[in-house]
Image 1 (tube, rainbow, N blue to C red):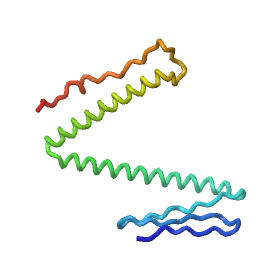
Image 2: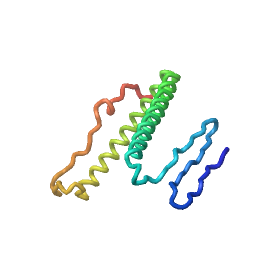
Image 3: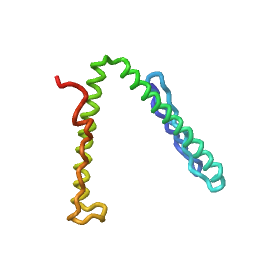
Image 4: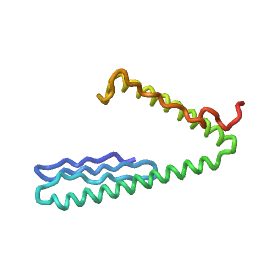
Length: 139
């Protein structure tokens, strides 16, 4: 495994940081970071745009591969396993809904938005009927 390298800048020259990170068989090079000079601001803007586009493409591909892996995992589960997973997801959704209600109550108490009078009440979010009455029989 290689250690990250960090060349030392000299004088007023552009600073470059080009560490190399090795993870298993994957080797990632961090793009050099240079301080923009006043004469090359147009090309620097173009460089940043290109880097941004490359980063977006990289993030999209990572997200897509994660989704594909999740779909493969779901397909590999038995029907009982998928049902258990669905119940876990519904329980998680209920917990998040409760947390959201608590946060809304805190916002009301603290009058975060400065639009609410103390007499105004924020209703707590209610559970959808599908969450209250699960399609799965109790065990």
